Image 1: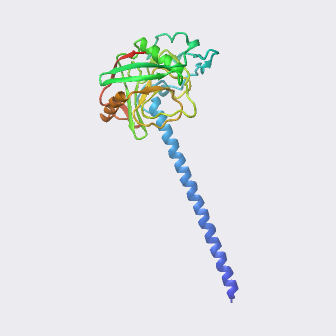
Image 2: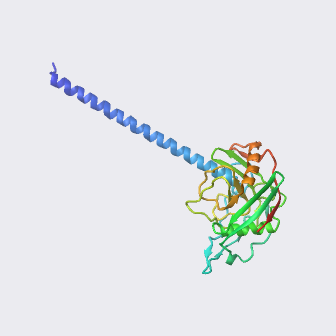
Image 3: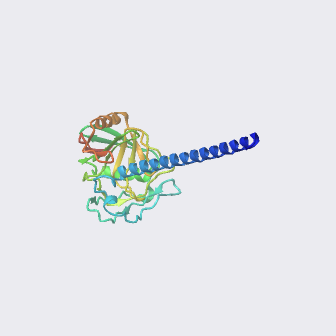
Length: 275
């Protein structure tokens, strides 16, 4: 018959085994929670990127139709006088929705100081856009050049996303299909610290690098995106009020990714360079 000492030792062994099993279960639960959170974060980021590039919707974005072609665009290099040399490379994807409007003049000496002010007149109201040459000289030069060529005039804003943490109106495609743009592309101007708060104007792109063109998006909420899209400027308060009204109108035929054409159609009547 076991002694009291033996019974105590047996009880201690049972307790130790229970504690070990509990610790192992706790480790498994923490691991499963971590896996779940990581997977959810990956799905969220992928969903956001798909929404912005058009690869997850019905748009005929080049990235949705075929693997992106290798890009020959290069990042800007700084000259001794403080200007930068931008590369506006021909888009050789064969996309039929591109328009040949030439390229910005004197790209080898693009200014990096000051701002450019544009008046974006739409059928829903006016928005004043301030482009920052210091933050994105190549994008600011391209945007201003396209406005001077009347590239944006008469074009629809084809996509609205209105979600917590992701609210944008996307414009800049004369075809309204989501795949249009100029016949050139250029490199993104971003840093790891690039963010997209309310009032930001940023350039859209495909899933491939160095594919910035004419399409841009206007953030009407603090928008959570990876730092892959060039921030080119800001929208004024009156313009944000116009965006809020458009967002309040909702999305027509909202797609599975939560985006679509705005229920209140928006057309850029003119994009005028003020200064």
